[in-house]
Image 1: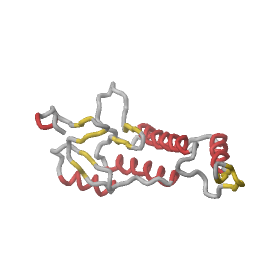
Image 2: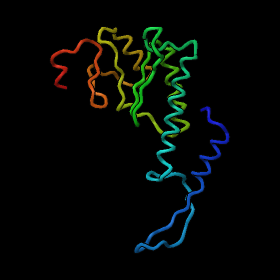
Image 3: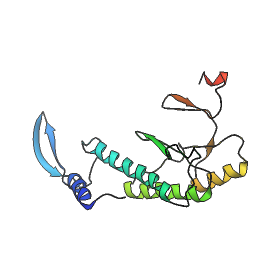
Length: 172
């Protein structure tokens, strides 16, 4: 994922050197070594989440250097954006090109293998313009394993749509 050996050693040292004590009536009694690594609620847990999210973000950003990747169509002078992330939510922008979709899925699969966090495909959705042919929708669903949904959507409390706002969009 592009991290240096020294950083990997530091993180491994933090994860593998955990000792716990049990409090009984407010008093610590004995220590025992963790045998399973970081648990939810450990102080280092958010840091590890940020590191894995950064690795995923970098993996998606490196797609722009791949000659076979066709990104989301934007003006040539605009920055190349292929994803937006907030906490554990992510929007990935792409063309419906088969090779590009497979490259994105390779990055997601590598992330899943490295972090042991799975992308929840049942909570995920693919959004395409309503005038796209059904065969394109089918191809995207087949490659990604993610079903389509329709615009507009609400993301982080904001409505997202691809055309001019209609009167009924306001009430989302």
